[in-house]
Every structure is written in structure tokens, then in C-alpha cells.
Image (cartoon, rainbow, N blue to C red):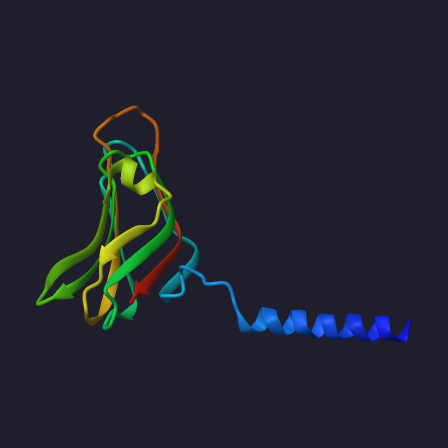
Length: 152
């Protein structure tokens, strides 16, 4: 009985050691979280005659050394001309890094890959609610759980 106990203890130690020495490769190991804003960022509501724009300062993000970026978000709109854009200013000109236009792009839950600008800048978020159809109903543009990754 004593030998069975030793064998179980040694087997457990070998198993634990083997798990710590050879971790499973994660395909996302080259993704580095550069920015995160959990929860609701904004929810815009308006009628068909409304053209609403909201701008937010995100943060200073350093894309130096990253070949591309990845955007994850949870967004929804029923306005066919709505937009979500992330941009930075260069000599008082907005340079779009990401621009999602219309219901198809905004409502898609897929991740967005973009060419990372190799610079450290203050980035901004612009949300536009607009619809070309007038149904008498309210239209919505919602954005939540924003994450931006850098990929080396």
C-alpha cells in the first residue's frame, strides 16, 4: 500500500511538471492589448431627421513596433448611414485609422484588422447616427466593450 501511495505522488508530480514545461501555444500570443474601455461607451438615439455626431478622446496609444492592429467591439445601429471611426489628428487633419460605415459593418461582430500607424498619438472616437429612411421610428447607434490590440 505504501508503494502505491509513492507511485501516485510521483506520478502526480511528473504530470504537474510536464504541464508547466510545455504550455499549449496560443495563436493570440502576438496580440498585445493597447487600449480597453469596458461597458457602454455611448448610446445615441434620434429620429430620421436627426444627424448626430459625438466625439470622444480615447487615449494616447503607441503603435510603434506593431505591423497591424485589431479592433474588437460590440456595436449596433439601425441607421443605414451611421458611422464609427477611430482617428488621430495630423496638422489639424483627421486621419482615419478605422472607419465602419452602415449597418453591415457596424452590426458585424467580427474583429476588424487594420494597418497600424507606426506612431504614438492621441486617438479619438467619432460616432455618427444618421439614416436615409424616415419610418417615424427612433434610430440607434450603440457602442460598448472597445478593445484595441497591436500585432507584432
